[in-house]
Amino acid sequence: MLLDRLLADLAAEGADLDARVADLPAADWALPTPAAGWTIAHQIAHLAWTDAWAVRAVTAPADFTAMAEEARRRDGARFIDDGADEGARQGAATLLAAWRAGRAELAGALAAVAPDTPVPWFGPPMKPASLATARIMETWAHGQDVADALGQRRRPTARLHHIAHIGIRTRGFSFAAHGLPDPGVPVRVELTAPDGTPWTWDDESAADRVTGPAEDFCLLVTQRRHPSDLAIKATGPVAEQWLTVAQAFAGPPGAGREPTEVRER
Image 1: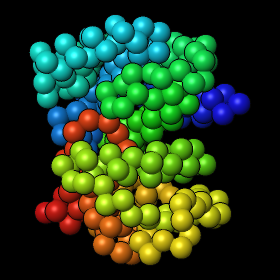
Image 2: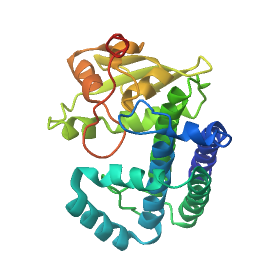
Image 3: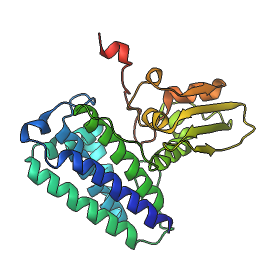
Image 4: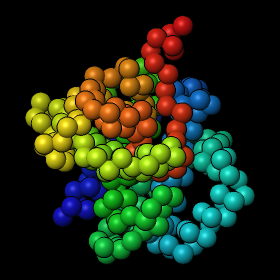
């Protein structure tokens, strides 16, 4: 039932982004997004590319592992950008069709695999539910880039809970990705959901705390906004340090985004 709910939310997140790009004029696919060097076409191409890798991880894990290791050895840091570049060179109609087909294929693959099956990934292996959660997070994050490029304000939904959850559960990874030891100190997280209800994680008695709107927290852990532009408050040295390195996605540390005051100069 958990995976069914996650797949339904993944489909909804994909549909929200699909609706933003489905009727775009061809020229708008070349609009720049906040990710340096990436257009709207790059954002959709990256999602289609990652979904294809996820399908391979679920259905042919040994092939995934071998191909991922070879691609990283051969292409290094260009691995992800090359995938986006290749997809972005397709026409909009072809790219959109490929992304839609890949979303459907991934949903089917995840639904068919046993819930406890370890699935290899670019970070640690994950169970199908965790991989579905990661795909929700990434679809939402790249959807934010597209919305920003189009000057749109998205309506936050309860699906943010998945993104916040993975952002919290990757706290140790965030420190490791920056070459830092995990402090091993509990951090209480208290977020306000879009409907005003509280979402909480971890030890209520923890001295270190992170509080604020759920949407802002999700923007922070996906590195779509600079911490200074968000209403997120950290109390305690570990919580404060965490917010400077937080990332909900696998791979090396992202560059993040510049504060508003820097971007507007």
